[in-house]
Amino acid sequence: MHDTQCKLLLSEKPILARIMKGCIEEYKDCTIEQIEGYIEGKPDISTFSLHPNGKTIRGTNTEDSTLNEGTIYYDIRFTALAPSTNEQIELIINIEAQNKYNPGYPLVKRGVYYASRLISSQFGTEIDKQDYGGLKKVYTIWICMNPPESVKNTIIGFNLGMKIIAGDEKRASVEAAFKKSDYDLLSVIFVNLDKDSSGASNLLDMLSLLFLGEMKALEKCKALETKFGIEMYQEISEEVSNMCDLSAGVWEKGVAQGHKSEIICLLYFQSCTLLGAELM
Image 1 (cartoon, rainbow, N blue to C red):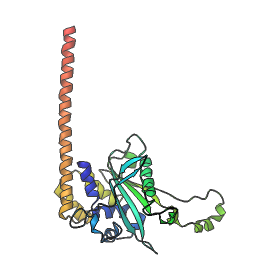
Image 2: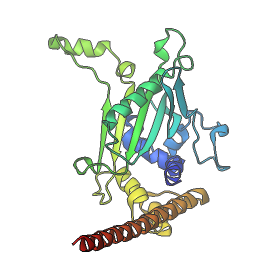
Image 3: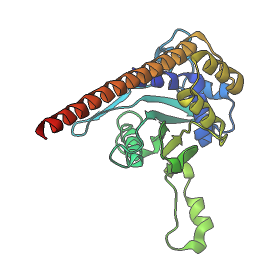
Image 4: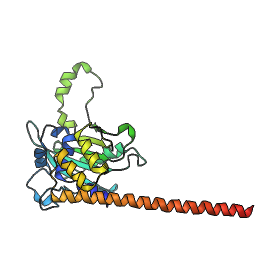
């Protein structure tokens, strides 16, 4: 339930727009209002809205499957138009909320795999047969709640680039021969939160406050509105409140379980002591 509530918050347009501005190059010079207009590709498509006010993104199909590889469920998947000097290009953006940074494998490999699936899933929808020119750029953005100390309070990107392996003297002509938009089609971004965010970026501060801040829902809503300019309409206020309530419930349950474990351990050691005394 807590995980679901986090995803609901991340799917709110005001939150998504700030994530896109803080992570994605195409939106860095746009206003939040402009970015909200680009989300979902066509702003007038109301069928993708979960709430009557149109503020929440459901996006395109959130599951991706093949015959042999099974099904992948994306936390949030949606399309957005990106501003360009000559044309509007579509981006397919996937956002994941991740609590375990080391789940038994390198998380960055999972990010690359997700992005690759977002590319390959365009066959038959965005592209047909050998028409690879229609491929859309994909982003997979990972909001990491509990990263290791070495990467806390950072935003790290991994993307495709061009490297001249031989013939460096022809750099200018080689670079002119390839458009960046033709090969820069895949980007994996890690947003590594820190409870004690140091102001490295506005996005890190906002998400750290939202998901790691130890304050009541009303205080959190007030801070989001005054410090980050997020309008606290009813749905988002309720979602912040629900998340805070669930967090408190998880904490109380953990404390209760901890007390129960302490009692069990105490009884165990007492029984061992009595048994040892009897044997002596």
